[in-house]
Image 1 (cartoon, rainbow, N blue to C red):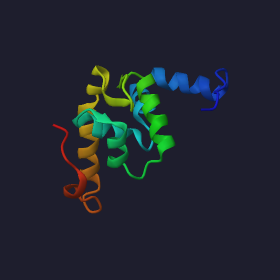
Image 2 (image 1 turned 90 degrees about the vertical axis):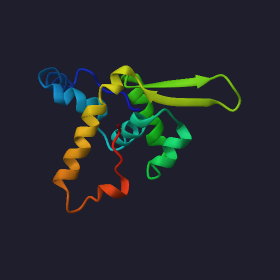
Image 3 (image 1 turned 90 degrees about the horizontal axis):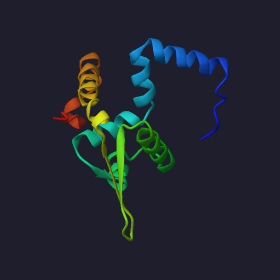
Image 4 (image 1 turned 120 degrees about the vertical axis):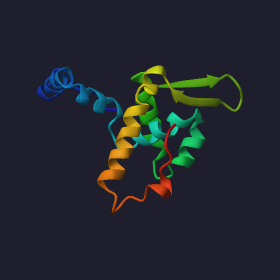
Amino acid sequence: MAAVKSSSTIQENKKLALNLCPVSYVMERIGGYWKPFILYYLAKEEKRYSELRREIPAVTEKMLIQHLKELEADGIIVRKAKPVVPPHVTYCLSDSGKGLIPVIEAMAQWAIKENRHTIKPSQWYRPIR
C-alpha cells in the first residue's frame, strides 16, 4: 500500500470527520467493495482463505489479501495460523467483529427492502443467525 501523508489537509479533515461522526468511523473500518462480503461470510463461521475465495469468486487475490490484512489490523477479524506444511490459516470474527453482526444483518435487510424489485434475496441471501 502507498504511504499516506499524515499531515495533509485531506487527512486532517478525515480525522475530524471520524471523531465527529460514529458512522464515519464504522464505514472507515468496514467500507469498501469486498469487506462487507468478507464479514458476511465470516459471521456465519470460521473460514480458510480458499473458502473465502470460493464464496467471493469475483474478488482478486490481491484485493482479498489486502482487505483481510486491513480487517485484521483494525481488530475486526482474527487470523489463526497453524505451523504445519502446507500452511493452515483460518479467519474468524473477533469479539469486536461479532459486534458488527447486527449491523451487517440490518444493512442486508435494508438493501432488500429498498431494492425489492431488483434484488432477489432468495437466490443469495441467508440470514446470519
